[in-house]
Amino acid sequence: MDEKTLTVYAPQAPEGVSLRLLAAQQKAKTQTLRPALQQWAAQYGSRRPISARLAPARALHDRLIVVDGKTAWLLTQSLNAFAKRSPASIEKTNPEATGLKVAAYEDIWSASAPL
Image (cartoon, rainbow, N blue to C red):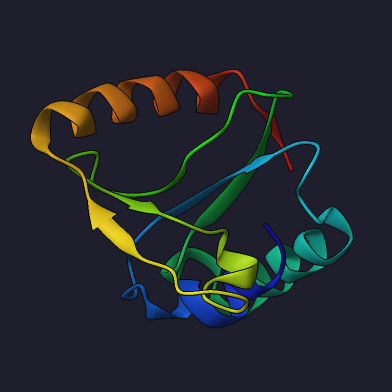
């Protein structure tokens, strides 16, 4: 994950929506992500709350978007290079898989360090 998440994708979320970003500790581009988070917070404040965490090594595999803890989509590529080198897709998970993924990712979020 890098600043592109905040400059290209996050602005698509409506105002008032709280964003939580969870990146793999060993793969996050913190040198660009951290300043982008600070800029986002300065620009939007409480109108578009955001928090980010770095997951422990090897805790993440899927690229996932979860909305309200009820709906989840799997991405076939990382957001920072989505569809850049080859076709990419976003697939909605079935309700059973969504429940399992949301629970697992909540546990990972809880075990992750704030960025």
